Image (cartoon, rainbow, N blue to C red):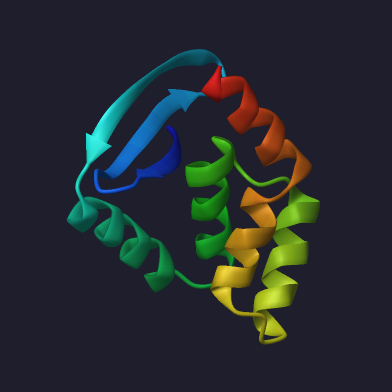
Length: 102
């Protein structure tokens, strides 16, 4: 399941939930749930971390090249948050999120 988190001023978080195959709904998600999901993600290491980030943010398994690239970055000392930023700011993520937001 792909999740795109949106924050409304004074209203907490709402999540646009859907899949790359279509269908979506907006649901409220409390702060604790979002933090728990992020904590679970950040507890993973290397391949497991990258694979879970791809599943959460791109709704797919990582391709071999992307997996290698991001794991290499992690092993070189790049912070996990930078890897997530690279994934969610990718052209693929932008296309996917714009399609879901319609």
